[in-house]
Amino acid sequence: MLSGEVISEGSGSVEFDADVLVLGGGPAGTWAACTAAERGARVILADKGFCGSSGATAPSGTGVWYIEADAEKREAAMASREVLGGYLQDRLWMHRVLDRTFDSINLLAARGYPFPIDANGHSRRNSLQGPEYMRLMRRQTQEASVLILDHSPALELLVDDTGAVAGATGLRRQRGDNWVVRAKSVIMATGGCAFLSKALGCNLLTGDGYLMAAEAGADLSGMEFSNAYAISASFSSVTKTLFYKWASFTYENGEIIPGAGSQGGRSAIARALMVGPVYAQLDQVEPGMQATLRLAQPNFFLPFDRVGINPFTQRFPITLLLEGTVRGTGGLRITDETCATSVAGLFAAGDAATRELICGGFTGGGSHNAAWAMSSGYWAGAAAADHAKQLGTTTKRQVFRAGGVALRSRTKASFNPNETTKAVQDEVFPFKRNYFRTADQLVPSLDRLNKLWQTINHADAADRDQVLRARECAAMIATARWMYRSALARQESRGMHRREEFPHQDHKQHHYITTGGLDDVWTGTRPVLAHALQDA
Image 1 (tube, one colour):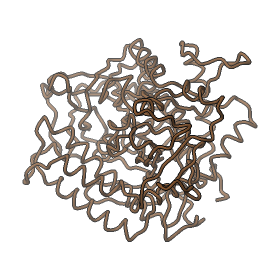
Image 2: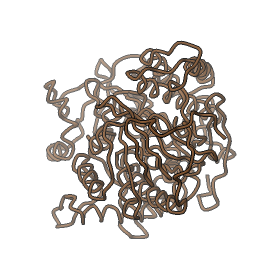
Image 3: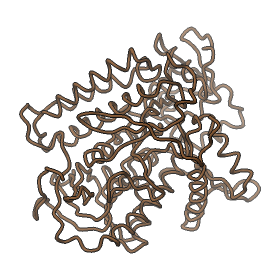
Image 4: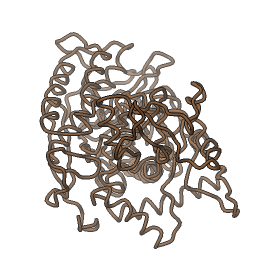
C-alpha cells in the first residue's frame, strides 16, 4: 500500500519489539502505558522530553473535572458546558469521562497523591499539582515495568503492507543516535500544538503527533476550534487565566477597557492589544484570599516577585499567548469508544485527540483536559493492549517508513526551520487572522501556508542536527492548514470559533467538521450523533 522505505534489521542504533508503543509521556501517555502494562502488554513509552516533567501539566497546577457520583451535580456539570460548546458534546462520552475520572482520581489518592484536606476534614480532589502528579505517574509507569525512553522524540510512524501502524522511529537526543520500535499498537499521546508561543509547558507541543498520524492516513476533527489565547503577564510565560477573573483591565492611560474580562471578555482585550498596551491588576481579590492564591499556584507569582510587582496592588502589562489546540478542542478523530483513530493499530489520547466529545467547540481549560487525558489514556491503553493480543505474532511482518517532509531525499535544498517557523507564526499569532476570523484574512493566509508546505515538501532531508526542528516546523504548517481550512468550512460562529461575517450560530451547521490530507487538505462534515443534544 505504501511506497516508503522498508525498515530492515539494523536500521536503528537501538531497536525494540513491543506490544504497545506510547508516544508522549504526559498524563495521557502515562495513564495509557500503565493501563496497557496492567493488561499484560510489553510497553515502551518514548517521550520528547523527560517523562514526568515535560508538557503542559507538569509545571502547573490544574483543575480536574471531578464530580461526585450525584446525578443532579453531574447533570449541572454537563449542562453548564453545552451552551459554550455549541451543543457539539456527546452526553454518552461526558458520562463516561465523569465516571472514569472519578475512579482514576480516587485511584491516585489510594496510590498516595496528597490531596488537601479542607476545614471539614474532606479530601478535596478537584485539582492536581503538576509536579507531584507527574512525579507519581512516572513512578507508577516504572513500577508497571514500562520501558521509558526519555529525550527520545518520535519522527515518523512505521506501517505494514496493509497500512496498519506497526511502530515508530525517532531520535535519542542525548546520545545523538536513533531508535526503532516495532509494535503491534501505537498510542499517540503527543499533546496538541501551541506553535512555540512560549506559553508555560507548551514549547514541546508542536503538533508532531498530528503530522505523523496524518502521514499514516489518519484524519482530524474540530480543528476550527483551535484559536485559544490565554492571558499572561507580558514578562511571564505562565497562563493561569483563572486568576484574571479577579482583575481589572485598563488601557495605558488607566481607563477601564469596556467589556474586558477573562471569561467572555477576552475579545475586548485582544482588540485593545491591537492598538496599544493593555494592563491588568488583580484588585478584586479579597485581602484574605491573596495568601490562598499564592499557596495554590506559587509559580504564577514567581515572575511578579522577580520584577518587584505586587499584582494585587499594582498594574502590570499583559498579553495573550496562543495555546492553539492545547486549549482548543481539535485533534485526531476518535472513531469509537476505545479511542481508536481511522488507522488500524493507532489510538489517540489526551490533547492529541479531539476533545469535542466532552467540550464541544469551546475550551474546557485544564479541568476538562485533565479529565480527558486520564480517561482517554486509560481507554487507549486498554484497547491497544487488546489489539496487540488479538494480532498475535508479527515477527515476519515487513514494515515501512511513513514519514515524508524532512526525512526523504528531494530535489530542492533543505529548508531553514527557524525562518519557516517564523513564517507560520506570522499566520497564526495575529488576532486579526486567528481570533477575529474573516474569509478576507483566512483565504490569503491559507494560500501562503499552502505555498510553505509545497516548499518544504520538495526540500531535501534535514541533517541530524536539524531534523527534529524541521519536523516540528512541518507539523505546525500542517496543523495551521487544517485549522484554517476547517475555519473556512464553518461559516458561522460556534464555540470559540468566531467568524466576523457570520456572527451567529446556524442550526444548519450543527455538525462536526473532519479534515485531513497533506498535499491536498480537505474537509467534510459528520452528523452529531442522536444521543448528543439536539436543541442547538
